[in-house]
Length: 144
Image (cartoon, rainbow, N blue to C red; front, side, top):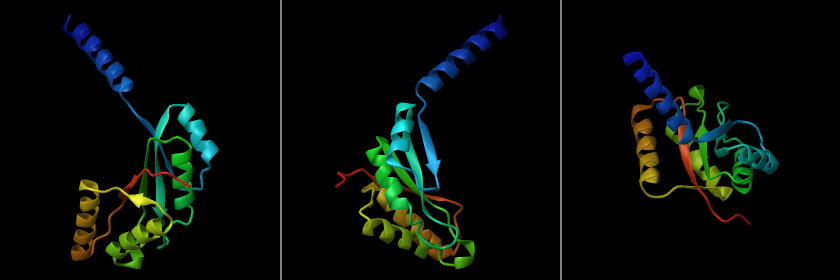
């Protein structure tokens, strides 16, 4: 009896978890609006876009892919930094990414997440350490 109850409870929890799950995609290559629309129609709701390359510069495809993700119907779009370990100064890499995105009209979120991003940046500057990955939360806006 105990094993049957455990199996039923496990099945129930698995069904509940799948019912509230969100599906997303991580992209590091240029991705079109139609590709995001297709993903949206297949149950995907968020995208995480590479915005900084391990080669030591912002990803030039990031801004257009972010725009395509929003226009393709993604509910949430984040960016990620893949840092360059040999380039030094990880805080500067974050600053360069933030500036690059701002120059291409991609806005970082405001409020608590924005303050947290700056705390991470300052901690990196003090320690001189390199993160494996830093996520940047982007704020949806009306696109031209």
